[in-house]
Length: 314
Ligand SMILES: NC(=O)c1ccc[n+]([C@@H]2O[C@H](COP(=O)([O-])OP(=O)(O)OC[C@H]3O[C@@H](n4cnc5c(N)ncnc54)[C@H](OP(=O)(O)O)[C@@H]3O)[C@@H](O)[C@H]2O)c1
Image 1 (cartoon, rainbow, N blue to C red):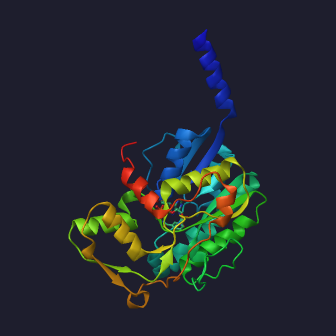
Image 2 (cartoon, protein in one colour):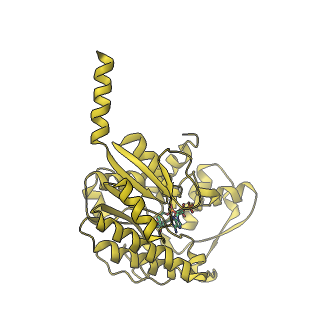
Image 3 (tube, rainbow, N blue to C red):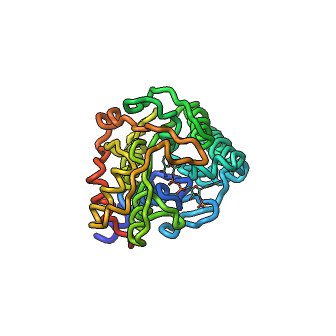
């Protein structure tokens, strides 16, 4: 009897499960979103990738967002209730050097995703960036501040925001400096680079007068999935709570791991030349989500503690 009850319950649960499709499922954020949604939520999760198949889940498929025809047939076949679109070219300097690829993927690819979601009437959640701002504001950027990107990556992501916002059911999540232990395809993120460099006894130059809000990937996944669950539409700044410089962040990471901080050399923003122009101050205001979400943006110290505990095995 009990077994039958269990089966019925499972059948019942299956029919009420929502279908969640994540693009960029093998990226830093995509991976974390898929894993979190699979563990904790009543979602059946479909992970879309381009070249690198995610290993953590069963329901994966390959599709290039630049191929609208393929995208359209894949989305229609799955018929997702929600799409979280994380796929993008995220190397800001490479985007500047190869503007065509950057625009094709981040701008036109996102337009393709938005158009297909519109055609199948699906809630689209788009992951955007603090780099849509020019960084000239002294205080933190709010959701209704006017974007003014200063590099190709920022411009392509802002174009994505414009096409996504034309949908009736869309959420735009702007975030900043995502970090986590499970880097995708060996891609570095800031604390991993700091740890690796100091362990190799290499000196690193780190900027002390450029500010942003580093975001722990698990915290971002939790906030994003709450926005999905509660069908919250509009623009949301989902970053970490602490506004800091890379220099202070590097020292926090080194100190937390009891490593020698003298390898971290402070440099001024004006001393370092990047291929792509960088905004100087992209601190995002998290006031709106602080009042609206149950999941709160984390202080950086707390986030680094969780980063240290992050288990790479699950
Ligand atoms: N990382 C940050 O600090 C940061 C800060 C602010 C905002 N964001 C935004 O957050 C999102 C996630 O960032 P992330 O760092 O997690 O990204 P990521 O690790 O660089 O992963 C991006 C993924 O996009 C996929 N992709 C690239 N081109 C594609 C295409 N043409 N078709 C389909 N998939 C494609 C790649 O799939 P394959 O590996 O299979 O090729 C890759 O796994 C991005 O939209 C980014 O703009 C990131």
